[in-house]
Image 1 (cartoon, one colour):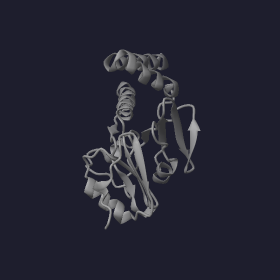
Image 2 (spheres, rainbow, N blue to C red):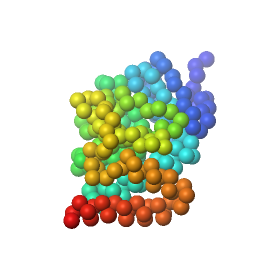
Image 3 (cartoon, rainbow, N blue to C red):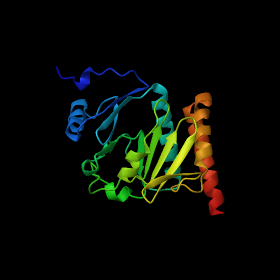
Image 4 (spheres, rainbow, N blue to C red):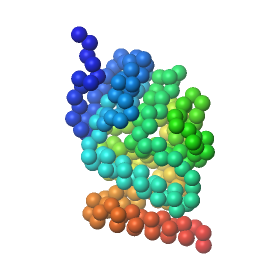
Length: 216
């Protein structure tokens, strides 16, 4: 009897690794699960990771994603927030679903598109992973050529792609004027103490202050 993917029960905040999964099996799983699903998938050369996010995981990803949007809005930079879109490249046998991701420098290249094909389209400029219950594999993002990756586990780690490999950086190549590595974790924590709306207002004022100083 063959195991069906819908038979797998994974509690929130946990992950499951499956090996010897062919690309076709992975494609079949994507079709079976559909786009409206709680599970997140990552595929790397016949190894499939299935993860079910926890409440804390989802709360943190939405918060950090919104903080990034505020920076981009105040800088008046066009962007596309692609969320947990499935990015896959069959020739590379790689696929990943980030917690959050953004097209920023390449926003115009995907503007108006309903689907992204990494064999012809660029990858997102920024991917964000919440590493509360699992540790993100850098290899998937390196292979797909994502220029910048953020990993958050209470601290924010920034990885910038250099010659095909990630190098940890104290600053963001996308937002060099903002000390996001230090400030974003502080505002994420603040949101748990004072509430989301107050935190967003305070963060927007902080961003405006940085921009004002750089323009003066």
